[in-house]
Every structure is written in structure tokens, then in C-alpha cells.
Image 1 (cartoon, rainbow, N blue to C red):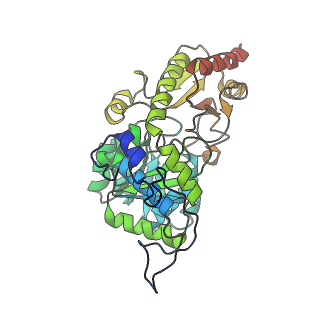
Image 2 (image 1 turned 180 degrees about the horizontal axis):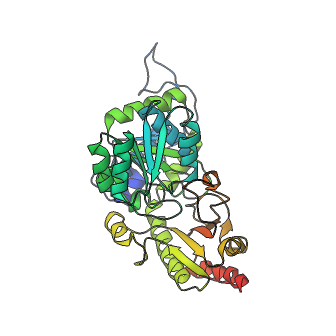
Image 3 (image 1 turned 30 degrees about the vertical axis):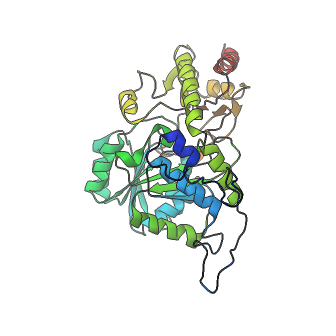
Length: 387
């Protein structure tokens, strides 16, 4: 299938960039491991292929697939999510420029911006992205050239109006970046809502099986794509062919997985809501969530991430995190298996002591696609230890 433009999401996920191999008819395109390509005379490149850092057919297939799913014209993939973010920021900003980002951004993103780009002379201001007025004021006060948004945010699950922030950013001549890792292109389409660029840690839901690290940038802005593409080629933080293949394989089942993740997370959130040990459940699928109505407007479903805060404070959170069996205590998220994370000391340790610090009574659950009854039974036995 060659033209997927007018097809549904799952059809695009399976077929975009995935034409069968013409010589043998292999339905699954081969993995191209070659680092270099024979030329038909000096500078006589075959289909533009010259050297593996610059181009690789397996990586190209993944990039086409991602662009088709996010509604962009160009997808660019990297060795990790942070490598993708690094290439994007260096392509867009110069020393003296400024970034406005959320006050509960992913710890790795904040570390990159504050400690790496801070030393390069790029400033940053953290604000509550769900407060459009606060974002407008911060952009005006700093002259920010980049606005960085996560929705749902990690791990506080705040919901931000992408279209409204796009208006704020564009009125000031700034570029809006949306980290769509939590929502995935199946549940949310930031480019269609006005974002200029989407970034992903493809390690998470897109890969989906906790077996490949990667990152991606997708845009519909050809000029911006050219700048980021040059950084991808010149700095070389690309993903290898096997990583690209594994990511492509995972991406083909993203839609069916996200439906199951969402089904299970909704049940887990409702179960948590009824527990006396729980102070607060942070999940946009709950009507009680302050961003519920907005999430329902700009997301297809509410995703597989749930955060929970405990009445018993840090000791209770630690006790539950170390007692689960179906939920594995580990970094990362978005795999088929359920994971339990204590952000204050794990994924967000880099923001301790800053305005982005995560409450010490909070756990972040990446709800997998196991049978939900087993997930709930696991939480029940872990909670019983708090009695």
C-alpha cells in the first residue's frame, strides 16, 4: 500500500513507510545494516543514500511512519528522546535566547535545559502551563523564542490547552514544542492544534515493549525541518537500524495498545479514588480532574499514566512502591508491562530542590496491558501493608 494519506490511524501505522520489498516481495521491509552505499560514479548516489549517519532506509521508513501518524511533513529520529530534544533546541536557539517551559516538566528535559543549555547561555522560566495568562506574561517578560509544553504533564498530569498556548507563542513570534510522549499520536494531535513541533521519547509508548531507546521530532514546517535535519546529520545522534526496526514494529500496534492502556488506567484510577490511604488521584479521565473537560476535547482517550499521592506521606509511597509484584519498580513508562515509579528519587531526582520538585508522597503508575483484575489485586496486596 503506497498512499495512506486518507486512511485511518491504524492503517497508517501499519502501512506508512512500510512498502513491501520489491525484489522478493517480503511484506516486512528488511533491516538495512550497511554503513555505506555504493555510488554510480563520484556523487552518483542511489536514491540519495551515501553514509549511514546521514541516511538509512530502515530509519527513513520509521521517520515516514511517524510523520504520517502525527500529521507532519517530516519526521526525524534519534538515539534517545533527549538527543531529539537537544538537536531541536540547538537548531532553533542561540546563546541569549530564552525558553518558557512547564513547572512540572520531565526531569531529564529540565536538566538538559537548565544545566546543559544554561551553560550555553540560554535562559529558562518555568510556569504553570495550564494558566494561559501566566504563560503569556512569561513569554512577554522574557522574549522567549521557544515555548515547551507537556500535556498531560509528567508526573503531575496537568492538562494544557494546546491551541491557546499556540496562539500565545505565535503572537510573540515563538515556536511551540509539544512533548507528546504521554498522549502519543493516537490519543492527541498537537500539530493539528497549532503546535510547530512534536517531540517524543519513542522509548515509551511508541516502542511500547521496553526494549529499545529512541527519540523523535515531527513537524509540518519545512524550514524548521531542514534546520533540525542538518543537526541530525551534522551532530549524528541518530538511532541505529535495529533500533529503528524495533520502534517501527512497536508503532504498528500503538492504537490497539493505547486502547488497552486507557481501559486499564481508567479502572485503576477509579479503584485508587475509593481508597482511604489515598490523598489524591491524578488522572485526566476522572471527572474530578481539573483538566478533565479540556482533555476530553483534545484527546481521544485519557492514556495509561496515573499518579497517586498518599495520606501517609513519603513512607506510605515508598512502602507501596516496594511491595508490588505485577507493577515492577523501575524507571521509564509506556511498555506493555505495568511499572511503578517513585519520581522524587527516580525520574525527577534532578529537579529536587527546585520549583519543579515532585511531592514526596507521589507515585507514578504506568498501567500496562495485563489483565486489570491482576493489576488491582497487586495494588490491593501492596496497600494492605499500610494497615
